[in-house]
Image 1 (cartoon, rainbow, N blue to C red):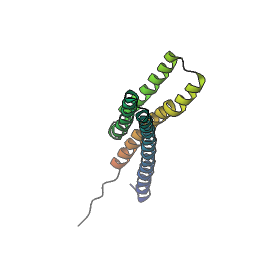
Image 2 (cartoon, rainbow, N blue to C red):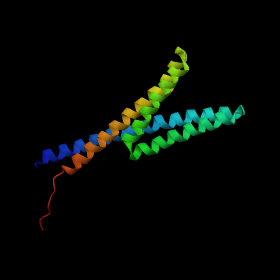
Image 3 (spheres, one colour):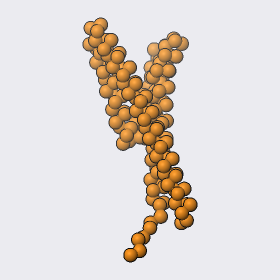
Image 4 (cartoon, rainbow, N blue to C red):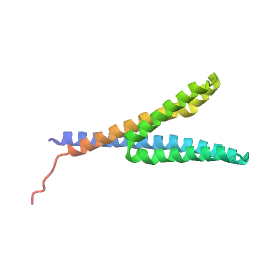
Length: 145
């Protein structure tokens, strides 16, 4: 392998690493903001004295953070859980007969972010594989004494 090819491999690894890192930062940001929204909902429910709503909001915040942790190690599983969650929310909306305003709100604040993060998790997994393949393609250099 020539030196130009070695730098190309290093460039590919560097580019893929930067893309993966930026993707993971954005994923974490979206999930943390979502968990923050659920936490604010929990605090609001607590201030009104509704313990049942408080527990539902706290459960949603904990699940959000659980998805964040699972996404670091099991991208494909976390992506499937998020996509399934988005489908469940849509089905519940159909069953409940949501009005257009509720659909817009739930679509913008719940369904779209869940699908966005699901896709980003799959992209991060792909970038991880690109990095692993590129690292294995590095030439082995022997040192001559």
